[in-house]
Figure 1 (cartoon, one colour):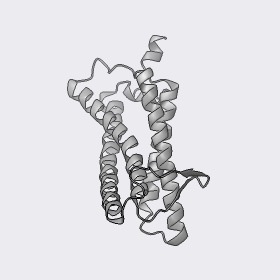
Figure 2 (figure 1 turned 180 degrees about the vertical axis):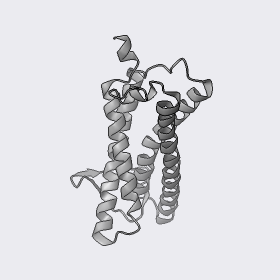
Figure 3 (figure 1 turned 90 degrees about the vertical axis):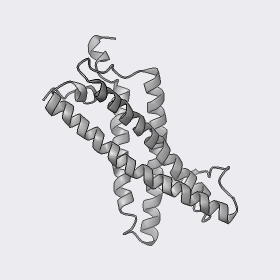
Figure 4 (figure 1 turned 90 degrees about the horizontal axis):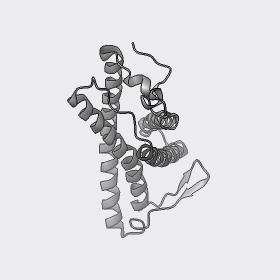
Length: 191
């Protein structure tokens, strides 16, 4: 591997990063429409939201596996310790969100006493998770409420992480004028 290749993420990591980011943003936009939608339109929004969520889960697990096999580039020597720790915390937070949010959604659907099926992209029947599905109504309602609350809390954490991540990228590109952003956007050069 050349020195230049070690200074940036692999192509697979870059593709997964941007694909997951786009799907997450799309899913956030869908979630903002839930309150205004009615009837079949609302059902379809939820089905698409769940489909995209499970897609994020699968891609995030693939990204995590790829990252374990192909470690990311080392931090820049010029980065301060607090910057490195903040970067690590935000990246770990994203993995918790990218895996935890779809799992909490799947658990919520599985625990729900309504038994509304999930058809991923209208074709693939997502099974309920057996250890939470089919419980007594009181238990199912309590779990559904707990998973729903966890899902909502993680959504707010995701907003914060996205803000921190984008803010840090802008800081590195325009204030620090280093090569951090070009590691994930290879054609981008220092500001």
